[in-house]
Amino acid sequence: MEQLVIRDADVVDGSGEPSYRADVVIDGGRIVSIVKEAAQAGCQRPRAVRELDAEGLVLSPGFIDMHAHSDLALLRDPDHSAKAAQGITLEVLGQDGLSYAPVDDRTLQEVRRAITGWNGYGDDLDLDWRSVGEYLDRLDRGIAVNAAYLVPQGTVRALAVGWEDRAATPEELDRMRRLVAEGMEQGAVGMSSGLTYTPGMYAPDAELTELCRVVASYGGYYCPHHRSYGAGALAAYAEMVELTRAADCPLHLAHATMNFGVNKGRAPELLALLDAALGAGADITLDTYPYTPGSTTLAALLPSWAGAGGPAEILARLGDPATAGRIRHGLEVTGADGCHGVPVAWETIEISGVTDPALSAFVGRTVRQAAQLRGESPWDTARHLLLADRLGTTILQHVGHEENVRAIMRHRAHTGGSDGILQGTKPHPRAYGTFPRYLGHYVRELGVLGLEECVAHLTSRPAARLRLADRGLVREGYRADLVLFDPATVAAGATFDEPRRPPVGIPYVLVDGRFVIEDGRRTDVLAGRSVRRTPK
Image 1 (spheres, rainbow, N blue to C red):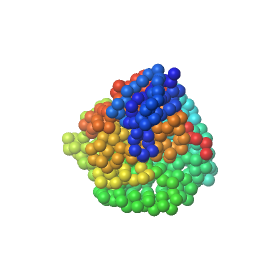
Image 2 (image 1 turned 180 degrees about the vertical axis):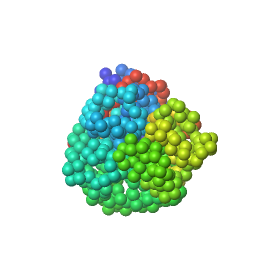
Image 3 (image 1 turned 135 degrees about the horizontal axis):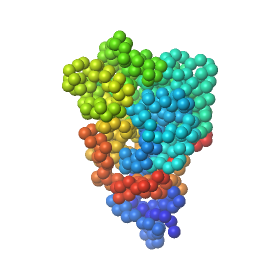
Image 4 (image 1 turned 60 degrees about the vertical axis):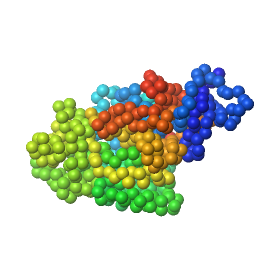
């Protein structure tokens, strides 16, 4: 007898087609049969060891988070309810060009310091891997949800070139090609970049094109956090489209937003650019989160020249008054490339987390508010935080535009990505609320997307980008990575004031046919594993 039958579910199967009522039978981690209501008349209904009454609930494929920063959180926190409770059954890691493989001993320590604001320093974990394959093997010991991995181009550059702002030598470029190829051979699904983060931002287009050619040869895709989401946003998008066209490499645009005052109402220009490229035969997808503020580290705002040499050199420059004055001028007057070419508005920079508990009083305040309390300039407060917290401070940037968010999420190439940073006392609520917010706020409340359309954005579209032949749809033979939600009540519980509140209206989530969320509560099941690249 089969393991489980989910009875009388309203199946939204991920294809974008209208829903239907059915019994769905699961065994051995896969969907073994789907008996539609029309077929039930006059025939015996399927039976199983367990039967779940899904009356009033939608059954859909599990959601795929195309932009996650859970690289250490999946190992640190087996519960991982931040993602599992949203209905997420697969996350894509290795984002924004910085992660923890491939590395050597030196680079691992440098990367840990550089992105401690994203994942913590990791001193509570045994970081016993060095290659991409070894990291994926570590995930395979058992995690809450499945995970795919992108080779991080910035980490590759740190390993082959270092953190210097210079061109790679031919020998260094050859080594980077080999490192990317090895990562792809070991199971990575593509390559990411963080082109406003050091050291990845130091790579010229010619270097990126060469690495994208390697990625494309393995059937992967390129996922850039491109060079500007502010003053040069449209040019930066066009640069990535042209670069991947030259490399004949599929393109997935990370957190494809149009932010800052210079881009208010300009989403149609971005979409026209993408439509023209798609019409010419380009293979392009994108992801967004359904919120206006962004989130990153405070150190990420600094000019690129200030980051040359790595974290230790950044701290040394901040500690020198004359050099710190140059950094301030770049931030406040000319507009640093780390801040997307726009002079920083300190009233939009909210401190969301610190690594040093002695600095916790700063959390929840903007830099300007904190400066007023300290009786000093916002720059002096920011510099104090950067030095005292050793670059670990995370921030929210309140610089987005709702009309842009809505326009982009309607696009035919759109998928969902939380960009969720789980660190900090007051993280961005997108880490805990992205997927139920799509379903509750933008589908039920605003009608920006239809239910079937939205589910396709969150399931089959990302599965197609990842080239997963047996995920992203409710189909016989497919993996039983599934979510059951109440379309009348599903909503993000997380808010900016209470960012870790769980969602509502998602009582059941299955990974590999096993309940990771049951009756709205996290079980102890660790059914997730690495999802490795399908050979081309």
